[in-house]
Amino acid sequence: MNSYYTVVIIICVLTMTSLAFDVGKNTILSKEDIKWFRLSFILTAVGAICEYLGVRFDKIGPNIPWLHYLITFTEFSVSPFLGICLARSCGMKRTIKPFSIIMLVNVLLEAMSIKNGKIFYIDSNGIFQRGDEYWIYMMFCVIGIAYILFVFVLIGIRAKLRNLISVILIAMIMITGQVANAIDGNIYSGYLSICVTATLLYIFIQNMLRHIMMETINLEKDISNHDSLTKVLSRISYDNRIREIDKNIRLTPQTMKFAICECDLNNLKIINDTFGHDSGDTYIINCCKTICDIFKHSPVYRTGGDEFVAILQSDDYDNLEQIKKSVQELSISEITKESTLIEKNSFAAGFAVFDSAKDKSFNDVMKRADVEMYHHKKMLKSL
Figure: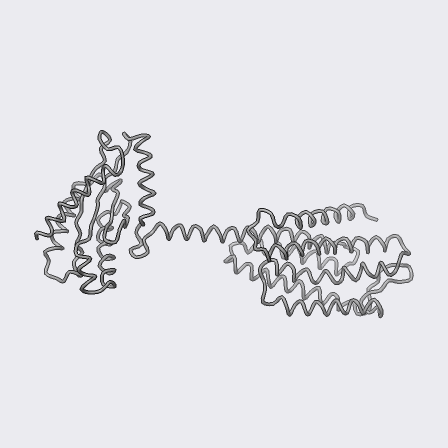
């Protein structure tokens, strides 16, 4: 008997056994998926052992016929079922029951073949032979392969076709092994291809789920970092930025160059009470757009219901005086123009520049910006 084939089967069985024990450890699969993957690995190992024993019985000549029948029956029953197990392992649920019924029909036909020898039989020399209706078994194998290919397509769609090539290659491994074995019964590649497919599919599904999980985490992180109404940076992002700035101030205060502009919207409460909160939201969005247009090169944060903070950097920092002048002119123009409150993008603003000689934290700068903003608001109210 080919010693190479013996080594291949031993490696396959050990691999499947190892995965069956390891499948529940350090994984993001659900408990149900873990159970089905474990069942897939166990059945694959059992099928590989049965295939090997069947080949061995054929080589050594006369043997115990009933045992040979039992081994062949087990192999022929397990093989088509593996497609269902692998499909369920990948999360497929809806079509499992009808395909399970189809494969149970195969099991019944294989059991009947032990008596009538139509699909397979063991001859007087103790050697496996294909019966006249062996094509029935092959038909069920083809159905199993077609089903797993269908599942692979769905997996590719689920993965948004990012890993379509990987899915195709995994499918081709299984098809190649199964087709070669079907064409020539002396090519024992069926369970080798199934073992490789099961292993790669297990890795692929975990990587796909991990990628989906990371996308979800990043999406949630992005949502938390942005204000849901105005889409500018949120209070959470603002607090994180303050911690980062304070850390840099402690370590290298001389290298820090930034300024703050605190903006507070005018008349928001009156607008909410008079026109309703939907109109108030529109007013906030319009004012926010105006603030963002002013600070084109700096991050803008919504720190409260009617409060925004811009941390000036790059060109905005270099052109601070010009920006202050523009804000002053704009605020006066908006507060005095002839229109309803909701049509005015009116806000008060206070500026402050970081001074490494006296500022020990971001809050020290913020206090000065807050004082200036308060005076600016008082001036605008007088208008």
